[in-house]
Image 1 (cartoon, helix red, strand yellow):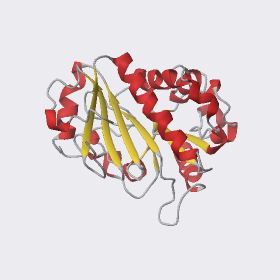
Image 2 (cartoon, rainbow, N blue to C red):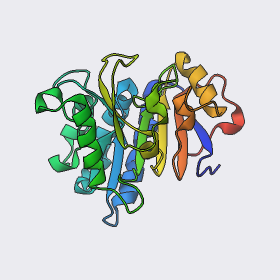
Image 3 (cartoon, helix red, strand yellow):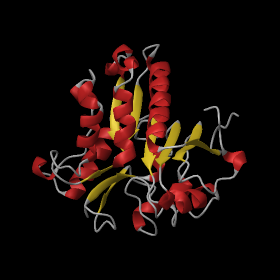
Image 4 (tube, helix red, strand yellow):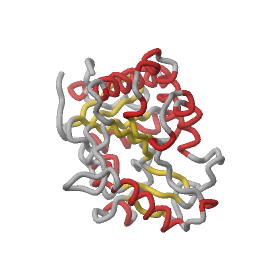
Length: 259
């Protein structure tokens, strides 16, 4: 079935490992199609176990050596404000899984500043917004991601947009500082909803029975302020990639068996 725009569809695989391979395959297919004629592809990455698993699976695919990675720019939906070599760092996880294993120019990897860079948390968020603006379009001071990966927490959070917090509803900034995060570490930088939703494709990747409730609420159109995942949508596609444990209560008509 073909689902486009803000309509949400669900892709189900039996296990997290199978899901990672499915998403990696779709990701590389999209990058190949996007860059085939010399077009730039901006990609927004996520952290977490599945974020790393998808990139690790992509790194093992022979197509990675056929892609002109100079045409691909990598960003992150959020970042923990910790040092670049800290295990909590999303960008370090992405580098280990894929970025350090492909021929992508250093200038195409757009990381959030770390404390040792001499910036405060607020300055790091402002600097990230300024970097996004370098690749902005006429109507918006940020790029449109060809693919935006998002993890989803059991509470329905995406990036570092947590339920019932002020960052969730901000629309006049590209990146925000986050303090006292309900999930450690406490200090983070996050992209805002307008930047995430400017993406052509938003792919939410989640596994486990503890995510089933958040998935159900997101698909049912819950309040974005209370369930941030419910408000994530791409211009062309919005797809929830899930394993069977997370999909236990998903209506059959929402499952896309072909994507």
